[in-house]
Image 1 (tube, rainbow over the protein chains, first blue to last red):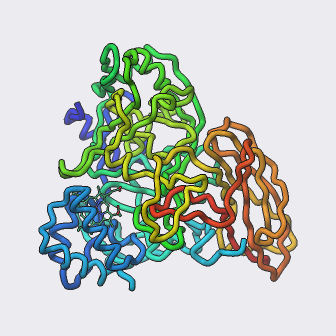
Image 2: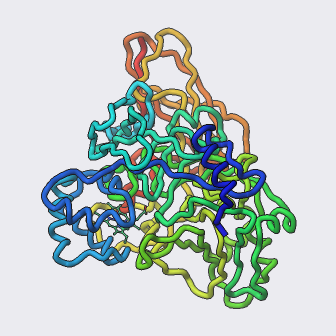
Image 3: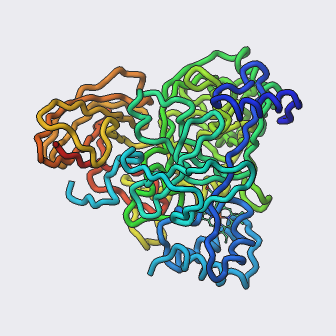
Length: 110
Length: 418
């Protein structure tokens, strides 16, 4: 249902590169395809980064972490537990404390 | 105004003079550049929103002009405040973007797209976009779409969530079909309690609750709720929900389900994650709580409250003294319509009536205009306050709740005469 013909895809790609974005081939065919610009935010080095990297990048970009106001240890713990319990992030129990320490060191407050 | 500090009342989401241009590779607030596919533009444009950790990239997405990127995956883009000074209708390419789940289709074929209507109905139906356009009466309405968490980044104390300044809102002329007409076509069966809406976006992992929202029957059957296939006279940008989205005039954007493909009439009150505990407000007239307070009863967020913004001036602007200066802005509410907007140039001590612009209906942005003549060497605190047709006005003291919803405080910006 959301598949595109190669021709439309080529056309869309061409427009994406060459023209202002409003000029998609959509009006004729009803097919719209967009290419998302690259993700730029990265986890910054620090103890626990690899553990956070394994657990925190599957569902969303890490700008979700850095845009937050500095959060307390309690708030970061609640956030990690929300990812695990509510959103079903497969975070091993042993990793929780490591990730929380990392997050507090990255964007924490007293 | 009393309680403004520098993290408050700042209408300046995008003050050109504050733009920061950083070379590639410069790390700022955790944002670093790396080339993932094609080489990234050599210079990354940044803006600083008026909040701690407010550094954001300016990025141009397909069908969009350069907007303030809050998150990359799922995509969340904020509209610069300067856009709202261009006119009361927010251009499609400048309209804010907010997805919850990264499993958002990046291609849609409107020719084969179907909207299923099922559940407690007499006859389940499946509608194409052509069916919507050909078999139903078309209706048009100007309405503001505003994120429940618009301005969350201005809360004090701050709360976790999407850290928007004031640009997670927009006003468009929506065209589509009444939801009521669609429901009546299927025929509502007995025991109907709510109508549940699902879009084509999906969670990355199946364990994450799919983004689904529900409206009570009386709201679903009300005059103005529609399924829209057109926005400001054009198709919706894919990032705003192409080919169809639900439009719930007067209510927060959380209900305006994008890429709407499933409408289900249900026999109970929906308690899926996105209805409970997400998107709920304290069950008191102010929708207020206090940090740390537990056991507060909540209800689903619903009607927007009244707000106004100065759009013609940015915080920190320097104006030529002795010359009359136009001050212009927008106001809106949850559907009663704007009765008055008042402007203060002395931080709220005195107020003067402004002149309202064209009335595009009770759900639309309403333009207002005034003038003032700054004196050289003097500082001014400019603030606007809107009052709606049932006498509700903006708050002087910002409300606080743990989710950062419904900010509608009087915003102040400082200007100096030169």
